[in-house]
Length: 369
Ligand SMILES: NC(=O)c1ccc[n+]([C@@H]2O[C@H](COP(=O)([O-])OP(=O)(O)OC[C@H]3O[C@@H](n4cnc5c(N)ncnc54)[C@H](OP(=O)(O)O)[C@@H]3O)[C@@H](O)[C@H]2O)c1
Image (tube, rainbow, N blue to C red; front, side):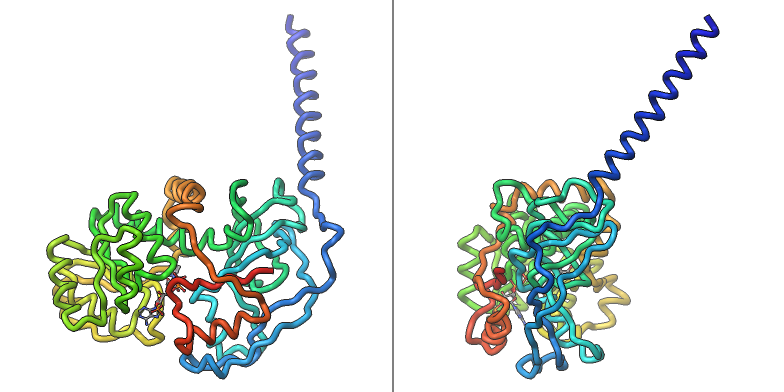
């Protein structure tokens, strides 16, 4: 009896060892590096060659260079980029005057996986959205950590998934913060692509929103998508109206993408122990006009918000919930409407917006490749 048991154990151990070795061999095989045959040696990429201080974007020099297609390292994917949105945060390299070398541009995009440096399974030929802080998405190809790539749902055109990450994840992060604090929120620059997503998602998630825009046309844009409260910051009684609404709704959190004097105004209007999250610098000016008394005695706070940092601290359950919600609202609540351009014309289009020839609202640029 004992002998039989020993034999069975030996046989069982051998089977387990062979099974483990086989699994390992299969994994090694399917996670090996690959490069599709039609990937060229060189590609077009957008570079900033002569950045200028903020406010002098018209003097910035850019170029499109022929450069080698990047080589993915272990854990990285090579993506043939199909589309990249133009986000305000992409303009960092335009103002990076301390940088001595030409800088690539572009934080996010979408495309098809055409290569891998190995150690990654299941991405070959897949449609993905990606965020990429190092290589730049304003290029025909990019390399990206597989961990920063998200498989796009089958029903989505690959180019329509290019804003999958930055704005939608930020919107859902704001909703998480509002729900935790059980408060209505202020949505600054509410006619932006992100602002409109926030209006739609907040309505579905039962979070009340006070929207701020800077032009009368934008009031209608927001009303048309179901916003209940919209204030125009250009109106003479704006500050008074904002205070009344904040009071009525008992709002204690503001999300401010504008900065400059807007941050000071928000702090002034908010009740004690409230928080203003500054998450953008659309005004191009330093935060100003904050009464120290508000910070010292009224417990008001001004905090920076960066989605990339928040996501690392929100916990796995919250992250999975957000990924699931984004996936299911990509063609609805967090859909972005674009004005398409290409690599050659993108800087000209950006300049039109900068010089007021083209409004940013309703003209979110997308580079198609
Ligand atoms: N911190 C983070 O983690 C994070 C993540 C995502 C996005 N963001 C920030 O969110 C903001 C919105 O991004 P987006 O992609 O949605 O932008 P977008 O679609 O390109 O729109 C920009 C909007 O801002 C308005 N605007 C520009 N300058 C303004 C000013 N000085 N005062 C008031 N409104 C102004 C424009 O209105 P007009 O038509 O009147 O010009 C337009 O509606 C950006 O600041 C971006 O950097 C931050």
